Amino acid sequence: MSWIEDTVVFRGAIRRSGNSLVITIPAELSQRFLLREGQELLIYGISRRGPEFEGGLQIYLGYFVVHEKLPSVRFRVKAEDLTKLQMILKEIEREYLPSRVLHKRVEDRIVELQFMFGAITEKGIRRVRSKEEVEEIASSIEFKLSSEGFTVLEKSVEEKIIEWRNMDPALISRAAYRLAKVVRWSWEI
Image (cartoon, rainbow, N blue to C red):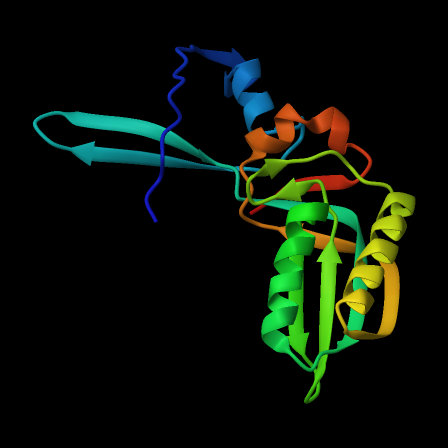
């Protein structure tokens, strides 16, 4: 994978602090990358030789890892018609907007369904849903599945912690006040 440069560029100056040289990171960049005082990082010297010699410093922050605590609903369903179940799942997704839906066949006609109701989605950030709200949604989904002829063998509402490794910190930065109670992030080198 190649690096993508941000469009914003800052000019700075190198200063002395004791026996070290210091570079100031502008507030816009520290907010965009959710940097914290004392955060560990790596600094590489980089150079290239063309008609002229060029040099630079690359500050490597690492991998941005997000842990999201979210309510989840799990069903174990007896399904005779898997095609019909797929259609019902699409309707449920459109109506209740879960952040993620997982399904797998566990036995011949037994399917395990999991609906996660997180604030982080592939398309952006949504509002945080309470466990009580998700319990009401679970009852509605159970009724829909039963009314369509599927036998719900088991239902549970639980909290899960999901790890995201493909998030741009800028998404979290813009909605940090909404996500403060359910999201933790860190840079891993």
